[in-house]
Amino acid sequence: MKIEIITQDDLFKLKEDILAEIRALNHSNSTNEQGKVWLKSAEVRRLLGISPGTLQNLRVTGTLPYRKIGGTIYYRRDDVDTMMENGSNDHNGK
Image (cartoon, rainbow, N blue to C red; front, side, top):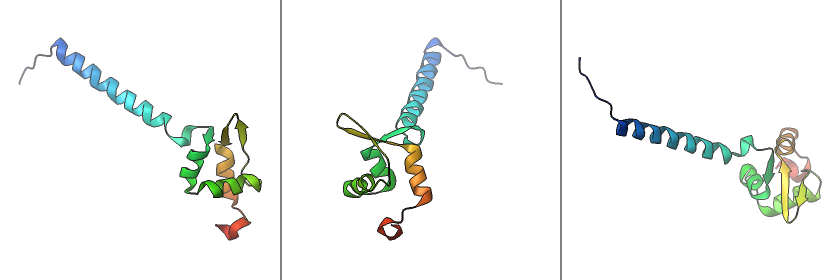
């Protein structure tokens, strides 16, 4: 049986490693659109793989509800999901 001595430096390194992993997890969760209630235009475009013009069409036709605060447009994640589930009769199902 081998005996290993754990020093304070070892414990400090372990603590730093654990904290770094927690920070990485928190960062990845905070940038994940799945957990957000409100999405900005760029996030919706990236999520749906559409152009700015297509997103504008969805707003203009009322297919995708939005809120504008200042110069920023926000979309509810639930509205985006509902639109995808119900589909759109516009653009021949595209």
